[in-house]
Image (cartoon, rainbow, N blue to C red):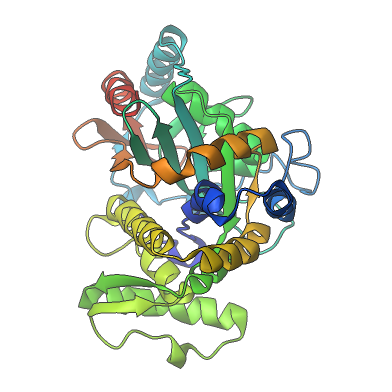
Length: 359
């Protein structure tokens, strides 16, 4: 694919949900927890789009790939129509699974530099809490997946958020991946930098090739924040405690290793490291951390559901962690359509495996 790395913010949002899960450890006093909740950016689905002025604009042009640079199979109009009809037939026949013993929340990293538009969702992780299996699943949904966005049509998955913010993205994930997802937590890349810094950084291991690419991202982000990048550059590969800028730069790496597939793996690595640091915090540290972080996240989790999560939080931190991504290996093909390379999963196999993992 043509490089657009300077515009793509591979973001991790999971910390927001983790904060929700550990708040119960901060204290059971209603006044304290209610205050935490009110400090977060709860946004009802009805209000989600009111602050954005360019909803529905086509933002996919920046992802266009020249035919000579395309890696996907070029489809004729007839072949594309046949593919779309086949996908629609499966979507109509496969039921959406909704299990009361499983709580699904979509963690969203938004690619935007200001609040004037909703932004493309360039990082999406489906976090699923299975109370019976005592399992937390983190499933990365790759941004270039070819999906049907309700009311918009066949596009890349990351375009759903730009056209309808969190609510439309949730509807798109539910209808295409056939699992009921009603809740989301999101941040943009600036907020993610701040959240990781408030954790005191995370320990990561980088190769020399990853250092080279990460330093380019560090230059860009420091320039946007009017910081001296020399204070943040990696010197060489190895293991070190990374600041927010360094960790986000690592998570954005797309052109080292297996392209976007490995980038989603880096995102899950950062998330796991963050979870490990949270689990080791003392109660005063948790209190201070939650107080600082919650204003940085946007979500649609009602307060009563928050209380339910709080009650379960001590056991949730002991659950088994499963990390995967969709498309799964050997279950997809790449097509060149709408001047873009897109990933087309074998939806029948994919949905069967996803539901087996989650439920």
